[in-house]
Amino acid sequence: MSRKYHLSYDAIDVKKDFGDSYDEAKRYLLCVLGNTGYLKISSYCESTLVLEYDQMQSKLFHYLKTNLAKYFHYSVSLVAISESGTGFINHSQNVHLNLRLKLELKNISCDNLKKEITNY
Image 1 (cartoon, rainbow, N blue to C red):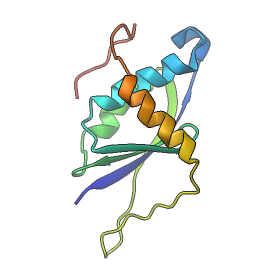
Image 2: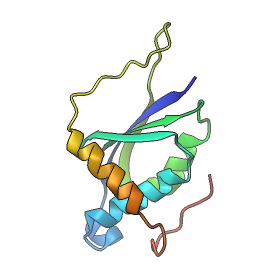
Image 3: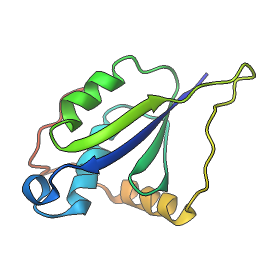
Image 4: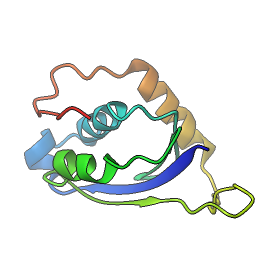
């Protein structure tokens, strides 16, 4: 059964850490997440992502702390599952954000990040 995680984030100091570029901050974040092998990633509101994996990710919390804590305030949580197997999650979504995320992921390059990302 797949598992979903809810991640909310905010860059600590975009000017200092990412040359005053929110796009660069998000690129770094998406490259970090790309190493985790998610099945699906969605964004239904600003600064929030829902990640889906094929199973529970025991290393995820430590990995995010190692790679994000210096640059982002964030909160990550495992989405609860009901007895019937459905996730306790609901959205009032901005579909344009999710479409923009899909386009970003299609065109993303994790070269020249200027910040190291550890292996997952």
